[in-house]
Length: 88
Image 1: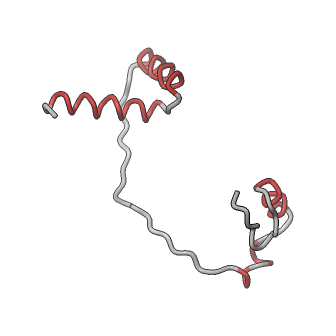
Image 2 (image 1 turned 180 degrees about the vertical axis):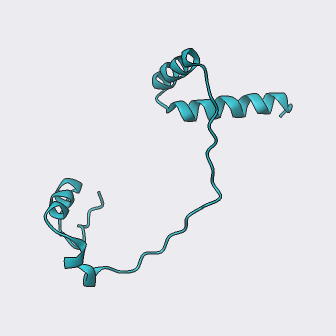
Image 3 (image 1 turned 90 degrees about the vertical axis):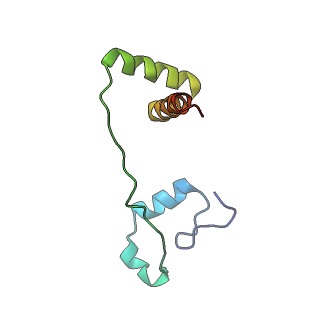
């Protein structure tokens, strides 16, 4: 957490911030909030492909050994395979 404190709760840790919001609601502090801007990429999509159960189990094991998610490992493997097949 940053060295500064939460602006509303004055808490200095995530746990204390959580405890504060367990007993308070935003409507009590609405006048202390400010507008936040952000963008959402609605064009992003995820496609799902079926994988045999035994392969999925092996992928999970390998991913865990490497400290990455199964999804990340598969994306890396597929990207590498496509690059090889396209001669990149």
